[in-house]
Image (cartoon, rainbow, N blue to C red; front, side, top):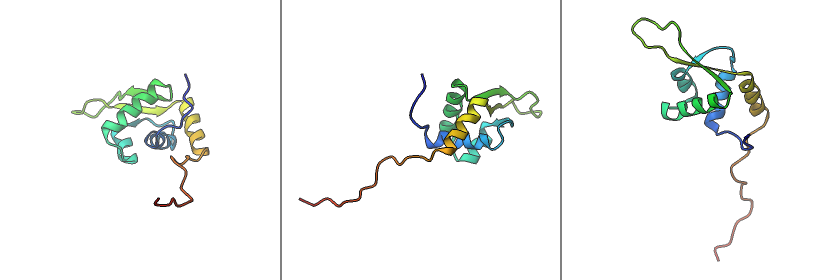
Length: 105
């Protein structure tokens, strides 16, 4: 089932950060620092994008000694297309601005 609504601003920020270099593997902490999201917001977004086929996910194969492997992410072809589509369509405001004043009656 495809969703018709636009992704959250946080999801769009993650997609745009990854789209800057779509072939490069990125790890979550680095992405979180770049887009200003904490782990509790970032990782559910990454998992959701992976489940929807917009991201590839893999474990780091050669971590430095003494550090566990990190989970890495990069855009798939569908993810690149989605990021380009989101960049081409401006975000709509949540509500239309009020142009008239209401009386205090």
